[in-house]
Image (cartoon, rainbow over all chains, first blue to last red; front, side):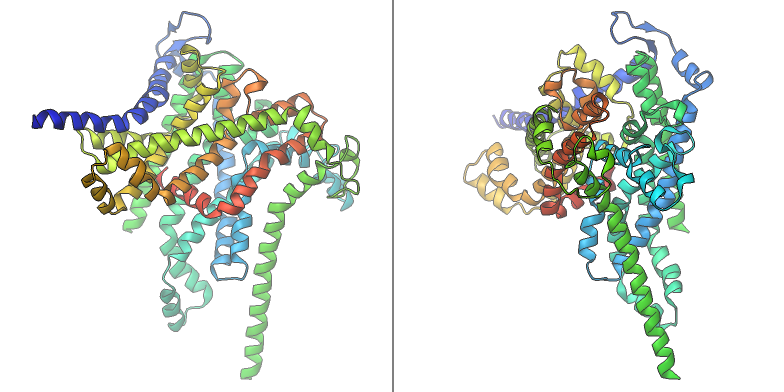
Amino acid sequence: MRTKSSVKSTLENYLFILPAVAIFAIFYIYPFYETFNLGLRAWDGVSPVKEFVGLSNFKELFLYDQFWWPSMWHAGYITLIALTLQNALALSLALACDRAIRLGKFYRLVFFIPPVLSEVVVGLVWKWIFEPNYGLLNHWLVVLGLDQLVRSWLSSPQTALTCVAIIHSWKGFGWGFIILLAGLQTIDRQLYEAARVDGANSWQRFWHVTIPLMIPVFVLVSILTILGTMQAFVLVLTMTGGSPSLGCSVPVTRILGSMRASLRFGYACAQGIIFGIILLIVSFIQIRVSRKMKQA
Amino acid sequence: MMNKSSLIYRSRRFMGGFGVNLFLLIVTAACIFPLLWMFGSSLKTQTTVFSDMSVIPKELHWENYYHAWTEGNFGTYFLNSVIYTISVVIGIVLVSSLAAYAFSRLQFPGRNFFFYMFLAAMMIPLPGAFVPLYVLMEKIGLRNTPHGYVLCLINVGLSLSIFLLKTFFDKMPKDLEDAARIDGCSKLGIWWNVALPLARPALAVIVIFNSLNVWNEYILALILFDEAKYMPLQVGLSTFHGEFVTQYHLLMSGITITIIPIILVYIFMQKHIVKGLTAGAVVG
């Protein structure tokens, strides 16, 4: 009797997680499996036959795909700008607001507006500003007498990717700012006071107190920046169409192109797998490095 | 001598404070100005949007919003976005709180296994997951249907919500639940009547954070929907831009319609959004 009721009770408990597990199995685990399954096949997304081709998708990706590795470099370039420009901006703003400057709350509210907007919205608004003939940017350049700088920003290979990277940073810095500011505020004020008493100037206090204590936060922010930016693609897609000839393709736009433009579902899955593995390796290296730094 | 150096110190400090404030103001302007320009453009005409370079035009053409809403189809898109957001958020709250409650309070074999399964899903990147999802939805006949899209998005928000709620339940005192149990309340009754109301702070974060995500979702809507009548705002915007390349004034009205709810929710619920984003960041 007792065991019977406890079995019933355990089954009841499973009912609580059943909806979550069912949704997870259908919409996460199955697609995960399907990615690896399709990665080994050639399929156009329609025909009933999904021909098994072994590793040939991967072989093609590594040896013959002339667009894949450049797209990886483009994403890396955007990431590099996000890591330097965006995070430097975020850190300097966080430092400025940490010193209890008046209106600090107001700035926090404002800097977080771009992060809550969607990439489509941000991309379209800036595309309008960058518009070659009627856009605001070129208009201002003419007004300021800088006519030689006027150009079609988003349709020339020299500038398109950099413009996207800068707008990506515009959208993202507020987010780094919030995390860095939260980190700065956990630092004990007495440490600064003690350093001041010992005669450290503000630069020395920054270098010997703030920086060492902030390293874990820096590592966190840079891991998140790298993983987030490498996978970002909607902004590129909205602003430039992700065109390889403009130097604006990124891995995910290539995956999307393999699926929708070339109708090569198997190849798209193979690209997804390789890109996923690369991201895993990157985050693994970063975690290792940050552990080393903590020990040192 | 003393006075002079203190004067220098003071003026340096003043200049420093001035420089910092100037810097903050410039960045503030850089954040807000593009949105102001968008709003100004939405009030110009098809001609003046290309010629009038003033931020806020002299004549305000509010009828653009009417045209965007009706002819631009943004009314439909807006309604769709509202329906998707509400359905997905309700789904996430119910499904994730049930599971999180079980992970925190109930005993059953494999409890940790299932919980870590959800955690692992947050750690493993799956770029291009939209390809197999498209295949799956086609296979089970849910592609180009609203409920298919809603189910996909419930899954997207599930793991983080379960994690946040489980951590919250773990810290919650059990006294009230024990009292309810002694009063003969069923497990489901305790979840609904006791645990959920107590978890309101965590639920607020989950609701706001997921609403924002669903409202801004683009790629799944792009590949799952063929028909304009199902599309949410984000896809509507890119479709409109693709079809009417020169109608920037209506496009900007559409964008304004898209972001007004977000800005409002953001201003009133800033605390929850920031909490959600930082929590998501720390886990992910």
